Image (tube, rainbow, N blue to C red; front, side, top):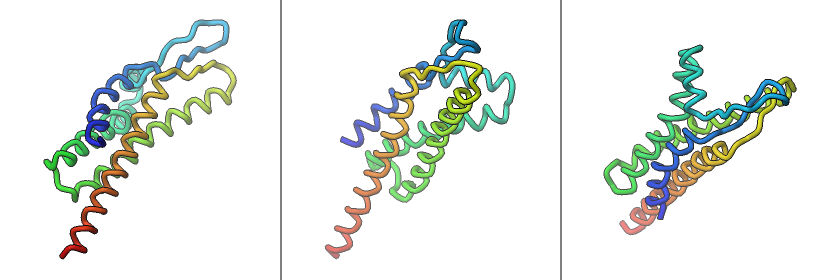
Length: 153
């Protein structure tokens, strides 16, 4: 079951990247514009290339590479020794959720603009958390199998 849930993430991540994370506007009187991971990255690439590169790694590459790595591991196409590296990738992906939460908190605290959380933020967060859970369960299953095989010898 873990392998199929993990494969579902290969579809869910791109949907989450283009889904609206939040709606933001300068003042409550004006309309709100939708912000997604992709539109945020486009803005960053135009203004701050280094930050855009960091966010691209955290938001796109880290979770997707981890998901692909877990899929290869589930079908025995990758060594179990790579599991710790995949676990680190999952933690890097979680840093992106922290950044988004920080932006929302800062903007709401300033009180100048208005932010409404959209469904894409929940989807993106669910993808990251599901990936972490799948990684932990995969690690536990590998440890359990190793313990059983050690006790049999």
